[in-house]
Image (tube, rainbow, N blue to C red; front, top):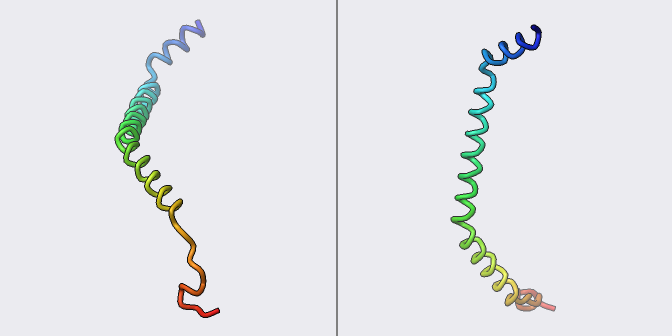
Length: 70
């Protein structure tokens, strides 16, 4: 009899509905994040390549060229 009462109480409880809502909301947020990442991935990779190329071609100025005298 006790098991039947537990099952009956579980069936009447609505706390599981809140869990389902959170799972659906979390899945939507994760899906949105994946969509955003796939949209901006190429642009971010190109920007990183441009920065890398620019830094590899950069030179360090000597103090004399900055207006200081030796």
